[in-house]
Image 1: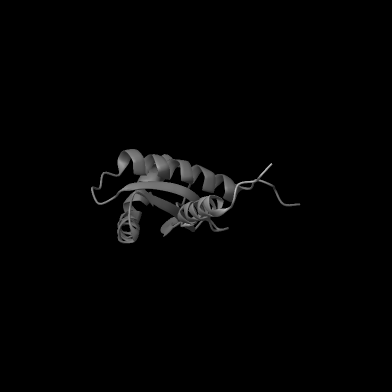
Image 2: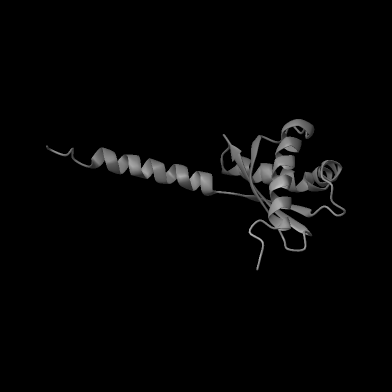
Length: 123
């Protein structure tokens, strides 16, 4: 029987917390905007971590630029992460943009437009 909350999930959760702290407090790069860590998915062997991020208040080019900077800084961020986590090997970090927030905002806009065009209930 598989564990409901296995080691991979615990490592992912802790890595998300630590990466959020590192980006907020320890990485001082003026090219980075307001970056939020949404999710971290670690492979089964803990060798690679996909880090899903969002960048607030940035256009499409700004999001791509922030993602490029994060992937350039990945080795330094991984080193800082290794100091904070008690693991023998720290996963290779690969940053990806998570567009679920943008999609959710777009759906909310569309729903509000639909609500404006619907006639009021006459009761």
